[in-house]
Length: 431
Image 1 (cartoon, rainbow, N blue to C red):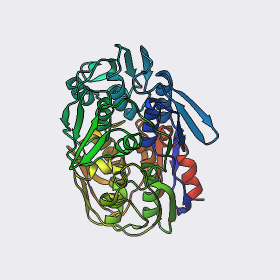
Image 2: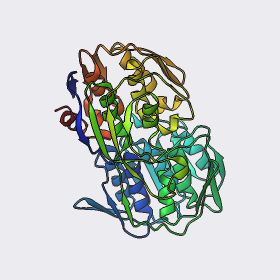
Image 3: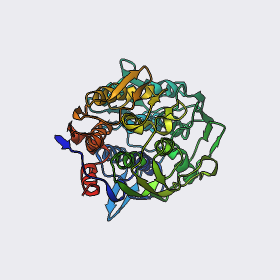
Image 4: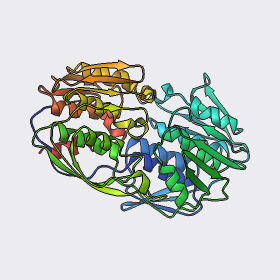
């Protein structure tokens, strides 16, 4: 589906962003692993998160919607239904987290994980390697791609230092550690999203965090009761960027997650001089097991260039395409470095973002691990191809509103992977 976004209208009003995708994935899986029913409110209804619910059901969970609440009755930590083929769709988070739970299942159960064309290009060797060190039996196509076949067997805890900060790999190993003999420690070079750690702490797991080390011990069971999924900062970021770029705009973002490991983009936005008022969680006062909420007031204003370093990348990984767009309008040169992970997303987001924005008139070039953008005060417009990537589709929409001629987004339906109501919410804010 092609959709054209034209310039002119300011954004006004209140946005309640869709439920957080990362936390919804984890709610489905940890709900299935829990020994008691888990009540989830505000679960995201999108293609990716439906894949996680379908996977939980295939592995023995019952997931029923009752009004605005989702009740998950799972098989428990060690009783996943064996000998099942799981279609993860386009959900990279599901592909990387689920093997941690399945690898340690008893009695030699077998599972096969596969997905769409995009998933078949995304490597799984970075989870398969450390899981194999724990004693897991995994077999991947060409050693690193789906289909990924898993045979349950006893695991042994290990200490593993991540080569790059990754919440998905960290979470996979922590889930495997719940089933492994002894202790499992994951060492992060930089902080990454910590939803899994907070949920495990709430579920009564033996988990400790200090100085970049996360340690879990073998558990008999998990006991979660209720999970509320807050608004997704990664989805709200697109409307926030549009409000900053388009004259006379001012919006309020309500009910958004304020977790300090998720709001890196908004910190970058503040540093660029954006008019942004609200309470974001601070690292030194962060909760151990809850997800804080916030309300943000975002308005149009001039912005300046910035440099995003490798230490900031894990906390803003999904929003970095927006930093490239903002750089087109900022005074000076905006540089993002240490973001090689972008090449392993739904598309090669360094190549597709750089090519896409250059086609709209941006002065931008790719580097091996990021990009550099020289602010020219705006964009001409044109056509941007989404390449099946939901973030790229939404980026094209915001670029169109901020451009001088408008942008036709080819493949706008990709936005439905994480934000099915994106175009409708954008239309409401622009009147």
